Image 1 (cartoon, rainbow, N blue to C red):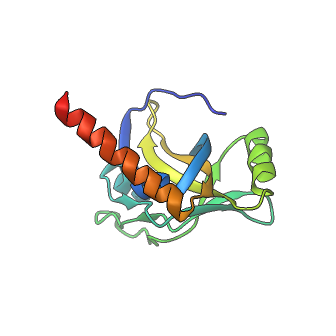
Image 2 (cartoon, helix red, strand yellow):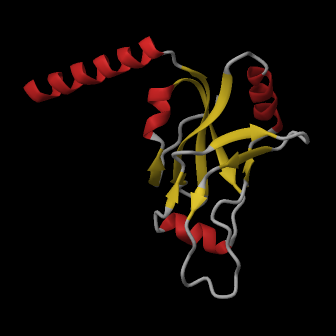
Image 3 (cartoon, rainbow, N blue to C red):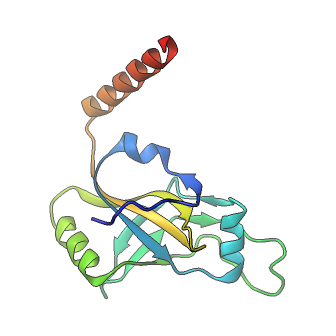
Length: 153
């Protein structure tokens, strides 16, 4: 598992992911972007609420459904806000993820987009398993209990 590093700036989070899925292993992946796309990310014009990741037939990890809005001062650069982006991980991490995906019910979910201390845009992804209805109700109960505890402190 990738080590937790200090993050410079959190851009956006997929808050729905922790409710819909039981998150198991987390990884930090780089994103292959164009110039206007990174400028839009730094302007916080990105959404990962409906995004998901998959490994294609060549063994490359891709993210689909990540919407990066067009940068209005891009000039002649054509931008497709919904294009698939490549995610960068080491071969060992890709092998681990591929082995985990062979289990029934596992998927790869993007959790957060952030800017690393070196200035690169990165995505935190997790191997996740879908929750059942009763598990979701349990999550809501835990959330309510934490809210009540914070009120009295």
